[in-house]
Image (cartoon, rainbow, N blue to C red; front, side, top):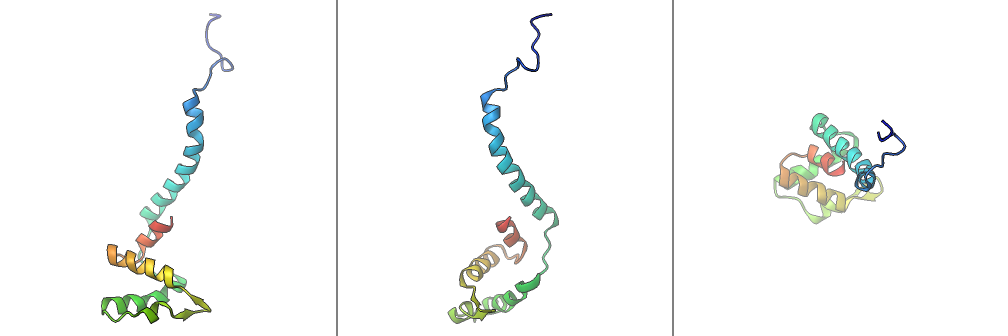
Length: 103
């Protein structure tokens, strides 16, 4: 009976201890992606309504470079609009893939 392991004499393998930091990074990220996958809906929110004319112009093949460099509330949102238009073109689903890319 004296040779039974106790809580203080049991060693945790190094691979388990080394894997814990990676789990603490991966699990929240995976949970947020899963949450967006479950509850993501195709509804525009707040300032995303300014993106609708760009999608309409892209669909009608009248989108110009000047449309992408247009000022909006003292900002020029060229790169975000290009990324969103590319995601919209690739997925044909305008909103949820953007949230999946952000999450």
